[in-house]
Amino acid sequence: MINIAGVVSIVLFYLLILVVGIWAGRKKQSGNDSEEEVMLAGRSIGLFVGIFTMTATWVGGGYINGTAEAIYTSGLVWCQAPFGYALSLVFGGIFFANPMRKQGYITMLDPLQDSFGERMGGLLFLPALCGEVFWAAGILAALGATLSVIIDMDHRTSVILSSCIAIFYTLFGGLYSVAYTDVIQLFCIFIGLWMCIPFAWSNEHVGSLSDLQVDWIGHVEPKKHWLYIDYGLLLVFGGIPWQVYFQRVLSSKTAGRAQLLSYVAAAGCILMAIPPVLIGAIAKATPWNETDYKGPYPLTVDETSMILPMVLQYLTPDFVSFFGLGAVSAAVMSSADSSVLSAASMFARNVYKLIFRQKASEMEIIWVMRVAIIVVGILATIMALTIPSIYGLWSMCSDLVYVILFPQLLMVVHFKKHCNTYGSLAAYIMALAIRLSGGEAILGLAPLIKYPGYDEETHEQMFPFRTMAMLVSLITLISVSWWTKMMFESGKLPPSYDYFRCVVNIPEDIQRVGDPSESGEQLSVMAGPLARSYGAATMAGKDERNGRINPALESDDDLPVAEARRLNQQTAQAQVKKMLDTATGVKPAGGGGGQSGMAMPTPEQDNTAF
Image 1 (tube, helix red, strand yellow):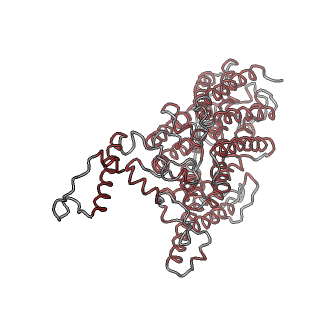
Image 2 (spheres, rainbow, N blue to C red; image 1 turned 60 degrees about the horizontal axis):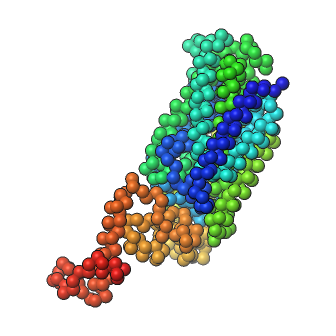
């Protein structure tokens, strides 16, 4: 029988998310449908909303449910996600947020396409796309299973309803809606769970957490030490190259603020993990066969995945679970929106525009993105309803993001001169081959190579082959890039063999970040400190090349605006004087040839000549 109170609570919280999403969408500037406005909220996300939306990069429905499940099944030591994702935000802030934001990129794939070309960027889009789509599908599937068990609602109905709401307000408001619903999402999680914890902890069926028989701390077996390290590194460095993170970084007003938000969000990840950790420990200390729970005991895998909503339903009063279940369900639903927007943004800009329609107008790109939002949302919904092992697919894709995207993003951001398209393709193939060779038990994919320490009973690789694949990919990228560059530049390979046209056979119309065209150089001279290249937009047509001021340059960047303008004027005056001196054949004053007989132009004269 359907739990009417539970349905009412979920409907109320869903309406709250929907209303906030639509209201936030109205903050978009009227008539401004540019890429930056829709994909990055005009780079105007404030500090308060920025902290919440950056924290919500990883803190959502899957995060809190997974944390509680990990505590119940394996113990605190195996609950690596809160610490791993917190460190990924810290390292992302230290090494990636500042340079990415200062270049003014729009998506995570922009620097990759700058260095490796549009088509290689399209190939790198595939693991990023799959990761985002499967993450959204996994969230929706978990939500459907939870609601079907807890309130006896048909899981298809709940999945379709949740996805439709998330797609609707994302379509309406872009990143504005995603960011502001993130604020509601985190408030729902924090207040809803903390409200439930005292009632659950004081339930008569819950034992003492200090009881030696209740091992909610857990331990790491000696044979699993390398596996433990492998998963930890996967979370830390594999958590960086995701568009859901970089869309928050790139939407910040300044590069410095992007770094600050990353650090604060890391602390937020740890803080938001406390309630689900306590709920998992409470569940571990509960003999479920003594409660109103009527399912199998000891709990099976299907039940442990829903341990958090089970605690809310069976260990708290109805009015408390009313808020808790509604808040958690709304948070889970709201977690899918950023993944849908991320995948659609990358497709519209990095695939449709930069590969197929370089001259497409911004309005055309926005409409393509809106269609992509609907398509990605439908794909995620279908997968959530039809694929039984959706978590296994997401797990495999997150591994591919780690082994393929992380080393390539690291190189193009910090060591761009030491990599090229040949190295990128070779590294891509090597990383993919090594990762697939290790198999995936959840998907039933048998390993092609049984690495040292392979467990025949559990069919689990104990060797850190994921990290090995990442390191081999990084070494391959560097070595193949160096070898091809040496072979072409030494003449051992003719320029006609440069098939990717990235070493010696570079087309004249290709623009790279940091290599401005002649018009860009002239603008840099005339505009002085305020002239900055726009990043990946240098490939997108004349209207977006180096003449566009980097929106990351604001008052807390290198120079205050007033100081930059003063230097601009001085630079322009000096340049005009030099041009006039050259034209009249007069040596500059103080150049060793005595004073010139020509009076120095006044600023007014400079401006007239200018």
